[in-house]
Image 1 (tube, rainbow, N blue to C red):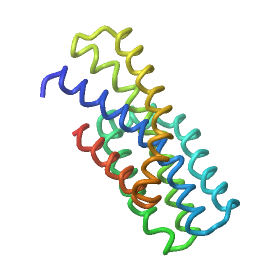
Image 2 (image 1 turned 45 degrees about the vertical axis):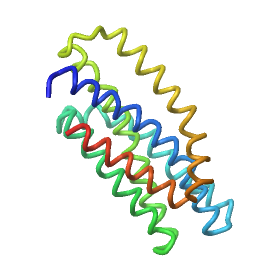
Image 3 (image 1 turned 60 degrees about the horizontal axis):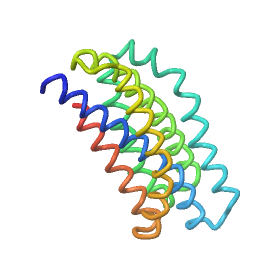
Image 4 (image 1 turned 90 degrees about the vertical axis):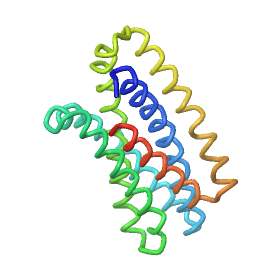
Length: 181
């Protein structure tokens, strides 16, 4: 695959990943509310996903330096897909397992979203694309994905139910991992 195609694949995976992260930030707490009926547990799950997402971003650059940017982005998307798939079974496993899987998913999403951002610069340079164009397009599309991801999460929940929405999210992360290969 040439440099431009690799860049486009990673760029697309980054936007899909941001979109999927926003879907999960809505779908997983909703799943907890529907399955437990507890708004308190819903809030705990939302915090358990968000806090690792925010904190793990600090580790993105050191992990990418140690293991390689490409390998790190593939691993974070693959583990995110597995964690999301596990979350669909978690209501039957218990609340503790759900919290663990949600924390893993949140941490992987934080790492993955940041590593993809770091990876864009060298690929853009290799493809001969000006960085200013990449930055503005990526930021604009990321913000659009953030805005539309929550709305899409609500629609997916309405159409497929909360489990279906989480499954779609798992599939999106698996697709991101495959695109980065």
